[in-house]
Image (tube, rainbow, N blue to C red; front, side):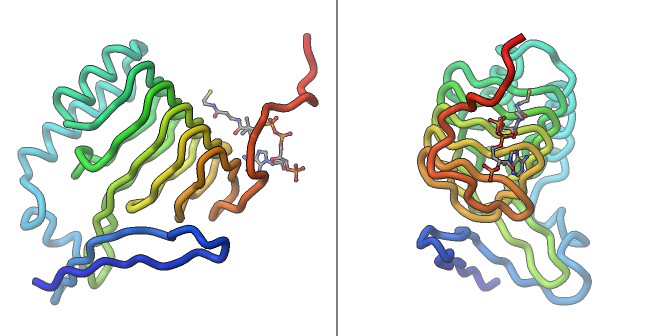
Length: 185
Ligand SMILES: CC(C)(COP(=O)(O)OP(=O)(O)OC[C@H]1O[C@@H](n2cnc3c(N)ncnc32)[C@H](O)[C@@H]1OP(=O)(O)O)[C@@H](O)C(=O)NCCC(=O)NCCS
């Protein structure tokens, strides 16, 4: 099986995504998922992830993610309800200290396409906000102190401190820095 890596340069100079690509012949690649990943591992991951999605305890979620999903999870990481790690290869995810994964955000380390399977690590730095309903694609690095706005599709690296949003993401500002417009009540 041929294995190669895609590293493209984004318009702003950052890397787009770092992916391992496994071409398949015949049916679409998802038809062959059991050849790429043990079904028992996927069943175990699915059950653990479902517990994590509904559990209100942040420390319990971090424990489960480290112990049973083999994810690298820093101290003080907070998962919103329904936030979802990759069900096949969660061990390819790392999250730095004090980061937040917003409600229903999704971290995907795999992409089953019709003619190939792509895999890529997700590295989220420290003090990062991932907004609700954001989707992080495989092969992406998100730098420390970055902010990903709610509903974003992250299909390239995000620089340290960068504030991004949209589908796919665009730079909103180079640093978030809070917002004075929010009314104090
Ligand atoms: C990132 C976030 C906090 C920014 O909120 P804010 O500081 O009030 O920022 P504003 O609404 O003033 O927007 C600042 C800029 O970002 C843009 N923006 C804000 N949210 C955006 C979004 N979800 N997608 C794309 N662009 C967005 C605005 O259009 C604005 O652009 P402009 O400066 O060109 O006018 C907010 O968008 C967000 O995602 N909140 C959800 C947080 C979350 O999910 N937390 C975890 C679960 S509780």
